[in-house]
Amino acid sequence: MNLSNLQPAEGSTHNQNKRLGRGEGSGKGGTAARGHKGAKSRSGYSKKIGFEGGQMPLQRRVPKFGFTNINRKEYEGVNLDTLQLLVDNGAITDTVDMTVFVANRLATKNEIVKILGRGELKAKLKVTAHKFTATAKAAIEAAGGEAVTI
Image 1 (tube, rainbow, N blue to C red):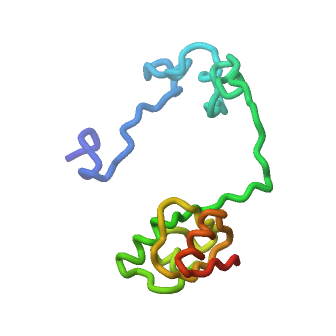
Image 2 (cartoon, rainbow, N blue to C red; image 1 turned 135 degrees about the horizontal axis):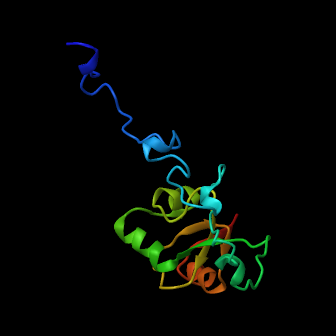
């Protein structure tokens, strides 16, 4: 072994990249494999999201319309047939409130629940929710139950 055949230990080196911009003799000098001119050849270049080379980007070309009401309330709807299904499965017996909705994954604890009138309810339930449709309230009371608004 002498200085002419020294090599690093197997697996000890990781960087196999060509060293750019280190003189003409390396074959990667001059433009350092960046080509001539243009944004990509400059130092400090970073591709901006949505940038289309100076052309008007798609996001700015497409027309905007409508508005978003900042006071809008999103209700999580629960239908009467869903409640009846829970009664049939034995998940609920007499009272339905937020803890029941969360336990049965009908709503999360921060959502606002509205009882909707699809289907029919045969069981006598005391339903506690944030809102009721008129048909849902009538159906619950017709079945002998009680609709309580939070």
